[in-house]
Image (tube, rainbow, N blue to C red; front, side, top):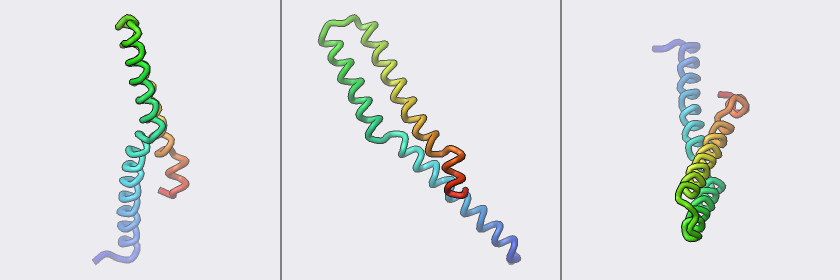
Length: 93
């Protein structure tokens, strides 16, 4: 059997592990919220409009790549803000 101090230490470690898993899960889900989805839809709409207006494919492709890159950066920064040190400190993890 574990002594009182060892049991508390083990319970705290397990609690921290569960909490960090929850933070990672929430960060992954926070990455793709409505703002990012609307932005991706706007990029798709812009690409389609440019294609129908007979704009050169090189410009359309570069606009699409820039738009997708910006959307990825938006999601990445949201996830980073969610799991930053201030969030972990606030949740006392």
